[in-house]
Length: 53
Image (cartoon, rainbow, N blue to C red):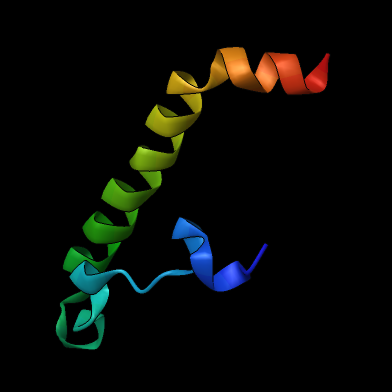
């Protein structure tokens, strides 16, 4: 597997200009992106359970 093929290693086009955002906008952006992780995990709980078992 090549790391460049993983979604987690791809460039997030939404953050290309993060250096131009205000601090509060950066914090909101990071928080919104982090929330996507919990939703993705929730959708995959059955597969995660199988992998663990």
